[in-house]
Length: 507
Image (tube, rainbow, N blue to C red; front, side):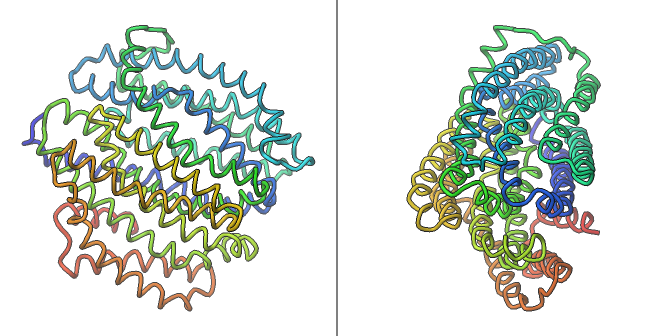
């Protein structure tokens, strides 16, 4: 591959980003319809318990030791070199490693569950038995998801996002249908966890079939290849540090909220947070291709193509973030009121505005993050996440008592404000040999349009009289951003491809 192949790379990037956006949009649509039903059936406290189980399992994610991210990079590199036998070695080694880790997780969960439920998480006594069983069921579910992730790393690393996306969509849909059905029949939180376990097990043979179709050297034979393990750990160690940072940044605040303010407060934080995080989720889905693609470009020493990938990718990110974040923040209270009711809206509206700003900032690091990982210097992202997580925890402990859930959201925002620009600037200077302020040159046009969008959306707030009107105003605000961006002559060739894609999707 050479720099002359840039148009092909651009087309592939847009195609993969499109499937990434689809992989984001469908679960979001499902969540919009199912979350009010689930919250209504479970109540604030039990929904908080469900969230805490998920968060706690996330803390066990660091036991991956960064192997998943390292495997994706190695597969992408071996594929670029046409070393298909080594791809099979990577997958078999990861399978063996994950089976061991899965067994460890199951044992640790059994040993820690009682202490978590009765002392550490402040779960009400009447909900403790259900919480215990939920934790027990969650352990094998987590282990099977690790194995499925090993198989799906193959289409992701090979930049075949249409395949991995379709598998994930099937998993999400199956899980949602099963969850709603069980709740409708009168079952509770334990049934929801069982549904997740069943779905993850059913999808395992599908994941294997997909990986085998793409690389015939892959076999369902877990091995302990010491040489490959060392190779993965050499790069995966920094992925581990990144995972720990992400874990602390994205999950610890919820556990601390449960400890200090009670499990009900987690619901008031998780619901707006789950919406705000969709901003970063959309951008991450669209930009997931940056990691394996940049790994291949670094392998081929294609610096000009890397810079173009960074610039066009950054514009894509800024456009996506701005067009979505403004209506989410301006109409936060209205949306929550009509979606889950006045009680939750009264507690969660201001935290949602703060969290929208936070996840928007974190989303802007998507392209630099992927390029840093693709370069083999995952330590950059590791330091970034650990630093932001440390700042967030300190501020959280200061602000949680006087300001509650709002204080937790404010701590997160301040940490992101301090960290995101530093990561972007550092990646520009050290990896791409740019000025370190290139992102400001890219963003200023988007910033002008964002200001116009913000003023118009705020003036339109009185028209948000019900859910349909609120959604219509939010959608109109997003479309207006694209229109103003184009009318002012800010759109460049890469932006036009993105706008065309988005308009086709919305149609």
